Amino acid sequence: MFNPVQPHELMLGVGRVLRRAARTSDSQELDAYQRGQLLSAYSVVRHLAAEQVAAAALMEGMRRRLQACSERSSVPAARPALAAAMAAREPGALGAQLTGLLRRLGSLPEEAQLRCCIHRALAEMTDEEVHALADAEAEA
Picture 1 (tube, rainbow, N blue to C red):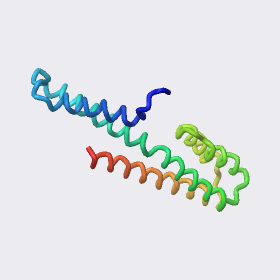
Picture 2 (cartoon, rainbow, N blue to C red; picture 1 turned 90 degrees about the vertical axis):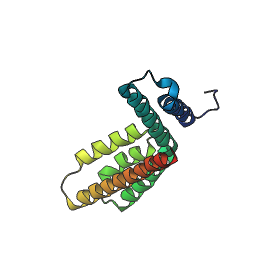
Picture 3 (spheres, rainbow, N blue to C red; picture 1 turned 120 degrees about the vertical axis):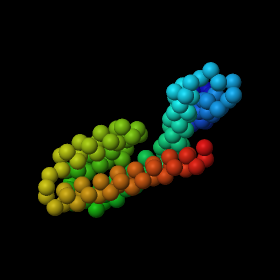
Picture 4 (tube, rainbow, N blue to C red; picture 1 turned 180 degrees about the horizontal axis):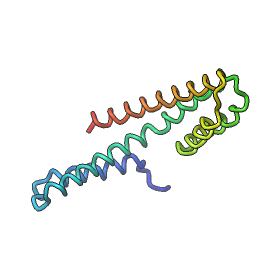
C-alpha cells in the first residue's frame, strides 16, 4: 500500500467526522435515531482502531502463552497444532487451530492440563483486548 496513513489512523479519522456530524448544530434535521446511528458508527470505528493498534501485541502475547503451554504439555500429538497456531499470522487462523485442538483433546489428565492452559491463555488475551478497548474509550 502506498498510503503512509495506517488503517487505525484512517478509522479514527472517519470516526471523528461521524462524531462531529452527530454533534454539530447543522445536523438539526437529523432525528434522534439518525444521530444515534452516527454516534454508534463513531463508537464502532473507535473500537476497530483500538483493535488494529493492539492486534500485533495481542497475537505476540498469545504466541508466548501457547509456547509455554507447549513446553509444559506432555501431549506430543498436540504439538503440531500448537506450532501451527503459534505460526498463524491472522487471529482467525490461530483460533481455527486452537478450536480443532480443543475438540480433539480427550479426558486424560495431561490433556485436561493442556486444555486448561489454552483456556487460561485465551482468557488472558481477552483481558488484554478489553483493556485496549477501555483505553480507547478513555481517549475518546
